[in-house]
Image (cartoon, rainbow, N blue to C red; front, side, top):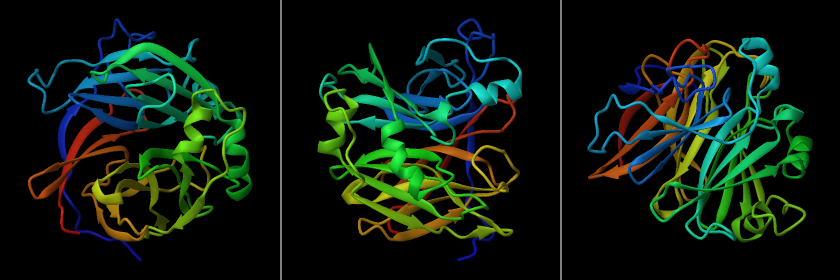
Length: 318
C-alpha cells in the first residue's frame, strides 16, 4: 500500500510553552514531544530528551490557551545541554500510557517507557494518580530490561513508541524504519503484567501475541507507528511517520505522517496522510458527535523549536 496526497488537515492549536523557571536549563518550551495522554482536563506529555513530564491544560478547558505548562520530575539528575551528549545520555522516554487501577495505584497511573533502542533506554516510570487524575506524589522506577530482552530477540532494532490498555491487554507499539519496515503491536495480558509493574512479581510475563504491521510508504520511506490509543469496542487509533533513517538512533527527514484506525479484529481499517507531514509522535482521541477528534503532539527534532499541539478530525464510520 502506497500512501500519497492529498491529505488530512491537522490544525495548529498551540505550542507547548513552559514556565522557564521550572525547567532546569531555563527552557520556555517542550521540544521533543513523544507521547500524549489526556486525563479529564489535563494533557500529559513526555519528551524523549527530558527527565520530566509536561502537564498542560486541555484545549477544551476553560482556561487561556496560552497558559504555560508545568513540569513533574520523573527521573533524578540532569541531562547535558550539548545535543550530542544529551542524545547519548537520555533515557529516551518515547511512550506514555494511562493505566487502569493496579496494586498500589487504586485510581490508576501513568506509565512512561524508554524506547529500548539502547541499554540506557530501558527505564520506565510509574506515576500514581489521585481520583482527580493528577499525580499524587507516588512514583516508582521500573527496570524494563527483562521485558524488552525477548522483544529484542524478535526485533534487532527495538524501538517502543506507544503503549495503552485495551480489552484486558497492555499493547506496546514497536516502530519500524527503513532498515526493517515492519512496525508491530505486541500484546500482554494486563492481569499478568500489572503485578510486575507494581513490583509484586520478579519477572514480566511473556507476550501473548506479536502482530507485524505494514502501513505503506511515502517517497519510498515506510510509515511507522509512533503512538496509539484505545477506542471504543476494541478498536484503536495510531499516529505514524515516515522518517528517512535506517535505525532507531539516528534522526532523519520526516517525509510523511498519518493517523489511522485498527479494528477490533486487529486489521487496519483506514489510514490518512497528514498535510504538511508534521512529525507527530503522540496521539489522544475523543469522540465528539459523529467524529473522532485526534489531538496530536509533534517532535520538531530541534531543541530550539517548541513542540506543537495539533488537531484533526475523522468520521466515526471507518
